[in-house]
Image (cartoon, rainbow, N blue to C red; front, side, top):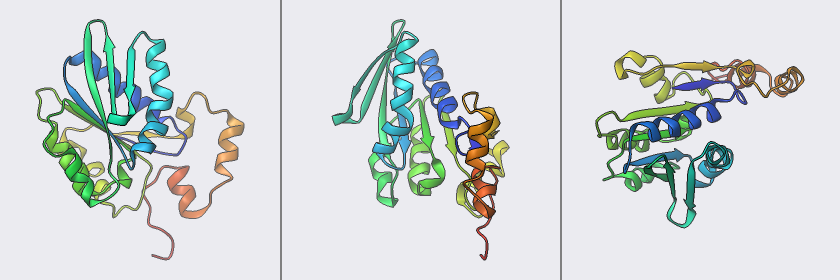
Length: 199
């Protein structure tokens, strides 16, 4: 689980780690990459990561009409299906699959039913779950279930701040910090799960 500040490198770190792990451990297996929408998965995860993976020697074929990316590397090939977890009905989209792993990008924006259906699909030996998100309310179900009890799920929790992103300059960090105040500063800059003011 990676959570924390905006622009702290969570998505790049988690996405690259997910693909490298999947390709080093499995071949001929299906995985899922999930975001709030399929468009957000493409924009937030694939736009930067596919060129990076290609530069590392991976063969990457994206068939967006099928919401599918196929990766090949050193004789191994795996399929990565793209899903949007927009609302409660989205859980039906992922139902019935057997997965070796799943990446939830911005998991705090997805309904619990969708996430839990995805978790249930990861039934292959050695399957792993990968989550990243910006903080929300401390009453959020993901915070209550996963971040407060990572040991219950055998999870590792990494908390990111903008200083953890090697491409962010001190001036860019200062500029970003000036954009927010109050609860939004605590959430987006300090990476804290805090209740909105007045609630």
